[in-house]
Length: 376
Image (cartoon, rainbow, N blue to C red; front, side, top):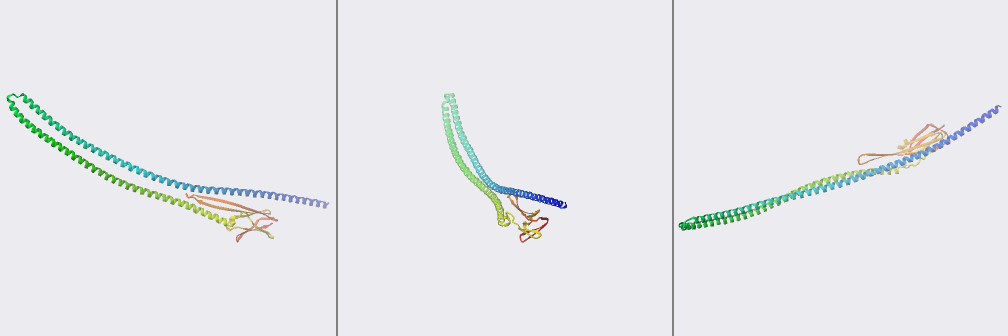
């Protein structure tokens, strides 16, 4: 009876052990499956982060290139605008000088026309006065003759002889007076002609002097305008050259700065490409089983040893390593563009014994990071 009870209990214990084993195997299977799913999810997440980081880096490079193109376009537009402004100023100076020269010519023509009209009016006035004086003398003589004829008819016959004698004397006197008046008129006409000739000579002399004065004035004015134009042109040329030199200096600074930053970045990328640490694609730890513990060794640079972590779950050892890149680029406006990237690597190791997650040792020596995990 007791043997049957013991046998029954033994069978029950065996069944419980079998059920526990099945449960543990099922749990281990589920854990392994979940771990694989987590690993795949981590890989996908890491790939997404890598793709996003790559897109971000390309977009920032494109932004830098666009800013450089904008700076180049701005410099070319500024240079074109300065050339157009300089050309417009030159055209304005030429047009203003031409307008002033035409105004001076018009003023000279008007002044000469007024002087000519004045001389013509003076000559016409003298001629008219001479004609009027001659007519007055002829009218006066005609009136005297008419008066004498009327007086003679009224005289008596007795007085005719005396009258004729007197008339002869008066006629002689009249002839003398007429001759004298004619001589005076001729002299007046001669004087008038001489005066007109003198006025004509004075007019020509005045015109010559005025023309010489105008030529000297125009020459001095043109010389002054040319000097002013040369001064303004030299000033504008100096200012334009200064502005172009400033623009060239600033553009060279921007280009040299961009070249320096790109060179530094290329040197950094070249250095990283030669560094074995940055060429890691997977973790290759070495695990060694000791009597009471497991020893895991992993080659890691000293400055990255803090980014390596080890975790324990039952008989599973998981190593994770996060590699980070931080870069920055300063553009021509002083803005800083920062880029951060990260790579996550993981490695899972299965061992035969259960491990104690509370008893993990760590040390670093000669480029090797070592972990010491105790067995349960």
